[in-house]
Image (cartoon, rainbow, N blue to C red):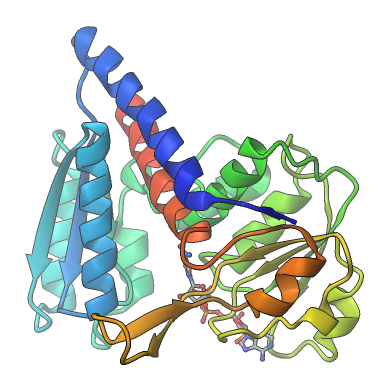
Length: 289
Ligand code: NAP
């Protein structure tokens, strides 16, 4: 079993990005600038955004965090987005999800200019991705592709089973794995909450991507020997032994599944850091446009 070390891989990619930023600056080009908009005080969102800002610092990007109170109205947020769309000093920006319930997240996603949509959630970005055109690819699937590429894993002709069909992970992942591309060319099965007998599918899979948000859902008896398992899930589970009061648990029962796998990602330290570095790549792409 080989551990797909997202933390180490992301650090190496950050170093490459930092070198590229130095070259850009030496050539007199603009330093990439990412803006993150955070509405409210959700604990997990706070830490995700702090991580994204820290990543920008690590590689020499400019970053700005815009904090808005939980009482921000939808109209106020849309006005903020419009201002960022028109601000030429900003290459790309994200609005951290989830948003407070009184704000329509889809409206917000669609208000972001596709040219600055570094999260890759806008319908134009999703459509271009589905057509195989150059675009911003949603950071989590993009990070997973980069991880598989770095470990030189050839997926051509493999059967991929994706668990979960969310707009940000499962659905784009299924499209990307089926594309005629260096990390792609799979035959893909996409499972969700209405799929009967999920084990029937996972037991036939060469690669399984699990994005459900159900801690330790995938058990050893659902996986065949030699499979590649990518665990996207992150759930905070209360743990008094931790200073934070919680630990992060993936969607895979790692202890029992790992011994059967050819490759597997850990949680934490797998897909999470790769998602973060993928956002940096999208920001660099935005700054070059
Ligand atoms: P989501 O929007 O809640 O989607 C969950 C998906 O799981 C849905 O498609 C749902 O099916 C399916 N599902 C739920 N229960 C199921 C069951 N019993 N059997 C089969 N399918 C089931 O979740 P998400 O945003 O994709 O996130 C999934 C997990 O990944 C979460 O833990 C999240 O925190 C984590 N995540 C991690 C990263 C990272 O960087 N590592 C990034 C994004 C998300 P239906 O569509 O039928 O409801």
